[in-house]
Image (tube, rainbow, N blue to C red; front, top):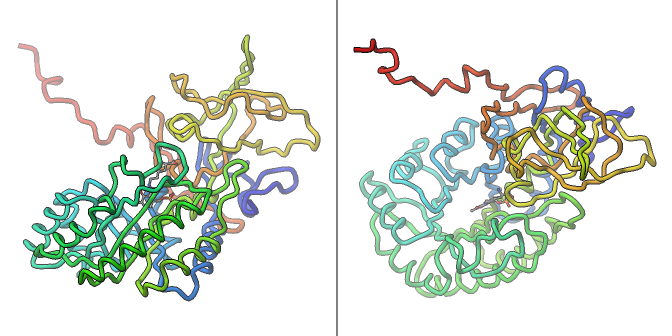
Length: 427
Ligand code: LLP
């Protein structure tokens, strides 16, 4: 990752030594590289050059406003999954015409918000079930508008990724079985307030193999032909996200090869194409900067106890996810490594970032960087153990800015109120 490299023996984010950020912002802290975001976006846009494509960033991966604003300025739209995300996307300046609303549980209220966003409403609702179609129809008809709809098809394809992030198998809660698609499209076409113009699919996340995509695209192209045959005017195809990144030694697909598949199977249909990449755009654009609070030699092994915990980055605890962890001070070349357990301060055994990880000698007080922490990291953080959310820093060349500060205890309790009876005089 050229954006996070050692310079003069110190790990830097672009031109900024991470030690400087630690000194000014404290740790733990998330650090994002603007250049990395630009590079990832450009590489995807380039791969799809010449095709009518909207890159709708799946902002669930990281909804930091500055990061959103930057991706938006490059041309990205947004794939949102809640009213909250919708508001953030609008706040970051993303046009409603570039916003797609996904998710299995949209509420009436969220539908209303999306239909009224800007003066135009959003570009597309990705509808996941028949009851949702009914509700959207009622809400849109009630407002006197038509909701542009793509129906999410569950192609029953195995994405060959972690069980918890596989979404395109028949047993998953997502979408409508492709076998029932013709019936559901017919039903949708008869509903007031609905304009069915698209097909959506998303089979899973962190895909490192293109074969499941190809199977899906072939199935999707057949379906679009069948739907057109049945009289539906299908003009948009949303291919979802899922492109994997390198955390360890994976070889994720080159976006150019992914785009080739789209050119081969989808482009001939002559539709507008939407993509919903999350992790690909931001995953390797961020790291979690942390300090070793203690080096604890124990009977069975040695623990590095960090000031970052599972509340800051839950992926290892939740998916046994691997994140590279490197010292900020460059290890001397040929330094011997020894296995250590790298853990957080939270009172749970699951608060473990790595077990038996070979590391060069690390001392108490040293800074470490947990890499590939731009996606589903800060976004999934909590204040468990009353730990403040880690601040977020954005680097741009040799400058950096705090884009979300660390909350104070007042911030953390700002939503709480003590019931009046606590202060009432005892009878
Ligand atoms: N579109 C839809 C409908 C999705 O459900 C998702 C991710 C995406 C797009 C973006 O997928 P991506 O390009 O980022 O793979 N928390 C997990 C990942 C959950 C993914 C949820 N859906 C993790 O940390 O690995």
